Length: 223
Length: 165
Image 1 (cartoon, each protein chain N blue to C red):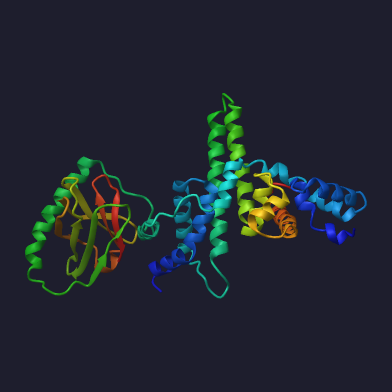
Image 2: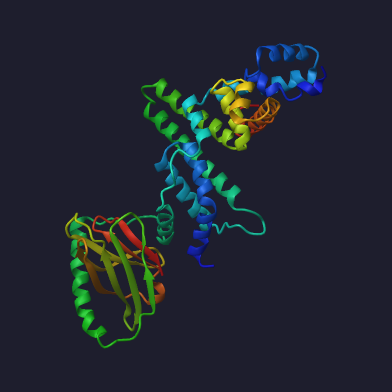
């Protein structure tokens, strides 16, 4: 028998996968073939290295991917990209509620002025889900002399579960600083329309976010 | 193309393949989610995309692999500092073993499906050439050849990862 016949047997040999007769033939050939002897020597560390993976884990490499990619991963990645900086501003609840109350007062003052400004919003964005929640929202931004008016239309999906919960709308400036512009309570099946304001010029509003009062970003969009 | 369109395009074209790789490497879908997301964000921030210079995929896989390696290393470092005063060798051994396992898994994932199929059957299932040929409905000469070239590719991949000389 010639070398050509055995040239690619080294892998099967070191794996111990050759039948007894073939193994004997191959070992006879090894005794007189330096090329095949080198080939076996090269592969000889591999069985020990493969042994570092438990066989049940190695089996998983045969069947494919152990878990499906979550469908909302793209939305979460997108939302994460829209937060200018990865840090999340967490306020103590008491402080958050105080700020929220102040914002409601500010909104109440602003609304009468807006009634006289009936022009179309300069920018309207649909917010994307950052974490799964029953909320969906669009936000319209309108440039004004004093800053930017922020109108939000937020839907809470109908469900038999859950009561009313507080939510907050923030705008983010180019540095990623978040400012509360409105807050509201909503429960299943409800629609909330809020109007808030910020002294940021329209061009400096880089992102809008709907958050739960614990600071979790639920919805977000780039502007 | 707007910035978010660039990110969406990266996700559409590569997230599936990247997920398959990272999920198999980590065997932990929560970690795989974090790593795929972080890799995509880094690519997007550095404006990596498919262009004339080639596909973004190799870049994405490299960055993801390094994130997994960092993750396993920092787990090991945590154990080391945690047990400074009272060495708990079994725990240390366990994280070392996990690290080795990750590197060998990574090397196996670089093989073509055909090569990986015969290597895993021969080693972990202890199947013979004839049994593998039967199961995959290919000639036994093809099984031998795939083991030969597959193990050579595996050896190269392990060398690149510093696992063997």
